[in-house]
Image (tube, rainbow, N blue to C red; front, top):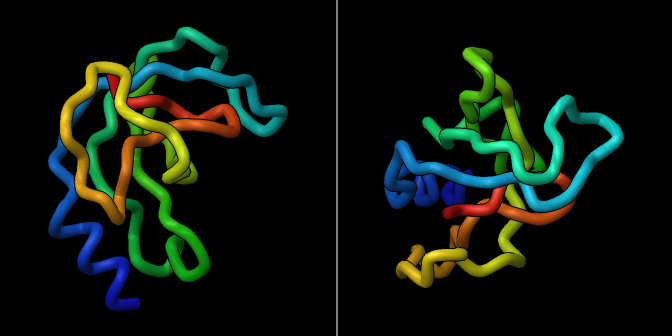
Length: 92
């Protein structure tokens, strides 16, 4: 799980993000604004990376997706990338 500790060190939080795509397993809708607040616990991230987000005064665990680029063009650590895709928040 060295990748988990690397991402945890490199993730600069909090940051604002916007949902780009609807997911059938999520209460979030495209355009919803969220705040990425931390990496999820190690045991949750055994097979892929998850982050904690804050939305509507709720704290949710969200799957990280490395395929999208930041909306604002800011630099993001290469191994981490921005949050986005699959109903997930996009860094903004």
